[in-house]
Length: 338
Ligand code: NAD
Ligand code: UD1
Image 1 (cartoon, helix red, strand yellow):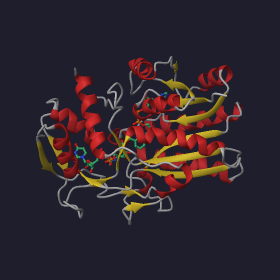
Image 2 (cartoon, helix red, strand yellow; image 1 turned 30 degrees about the horizontal axis):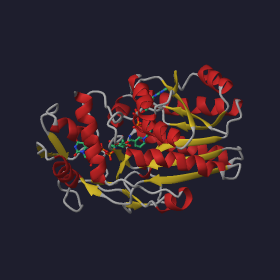
Image 3 (cartoon, rainbow, N blue to C red; image 1 turned 135 degrees about the vertical axis):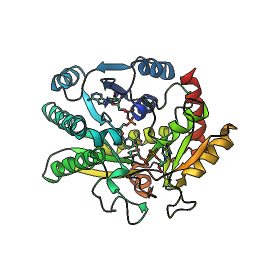
Image 4 (cartoon, protein in one colour; image 1 turned 30 degrees about the vertical axis):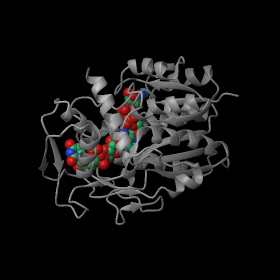
């Protein structure tokens, strides 16, 4: 029987790519999004890619009544909870916005799942829970650190709330996916990352600079103790991240009644900012205008994932290269700005 999956934030960057994967794997996604950081036209693009009608509910994840509507109308087998605010800088300016949307939103969802006896949850977490790690090659047992921002705090506390519930006997099956640095776009160039205003993240800044929307990329810091002095991250194609959610649903189906697993979603390989610039220039033939700038506050010098647990428990590993991701990001940016 086709499984119904509630995808909160399903019109967003990672959510939309996951909706495509879910459909391609025979699931029936039900998108819940308030479009606070996405556009309704994403749903049209999803229909174009999948050639299928997408069930989409416009509503807020902090609204208990919306869940009652959805859970009553569809027999939901599992929830993938993407919906959250994610701008690190904004979270420093306005922590309450983040506590409300990311933590209150999670609590309202959990209460609704309890009311409607839905027990399977995939939660979007982040490598930010490792803070600035002592060992840069982090596995799931690496210590969780005090986060650098209120955004990071909400991810850590979200994880801890779920862990606490399961450890105290709540019959729930939870997978916490700790994404490293998702980049790229769907190969169709119909969906991708669309930041509002000036991008904070590296890849959108690069593609917008290459198109002349931004004058120049600032490379934050060149004196870190890394391969070339710039920060190193584990960049992973967003379609690989999306695919991990399908594997997580399979794991949940085969898990004991009460369980929680944290799993890194990364490639296991680090790439520096300068390397990304070189890859971009090589793959696109476009020369990028960039300069060195002071370090960005709160940046971790180097972090990448030990991804063995994902391979063993999810039978998942990344299939795209950073070059693929950069190319796809570029194709998407060109199409979006046309
Ligand atoms: P995104 O902003 O593109 O997507 C989030 C979606 O949720 C948007 O469509 C937004 O409109 C929606 N949303 C937000 N608040 C809502 C609410 N109260 N009710 C209904 N819909 C709401 O972000 P993303 O990059 O796709 O991230 C998805 C998840 O993954 C987030 O939880 C984020 O914290 C986490 N994450 C993202 C990254 C990354 O680099 N993109 C890294 C680690 C973790
Ligand atoms: C950031 C957040 C992280 C969040 C993730 C996804 C911080 C400190 N961390 O991760 O919590 O989960 O985004 O939203 O904000 N860079 C430049 N110039 C730029 C932009 C970035 O040099 O214009 C560098 C950064 O210094 C960093 C690397 O590129 O070394 C990647 O930056 P970014 O894409 O913002 O991701 P993170 O900082 O890893």
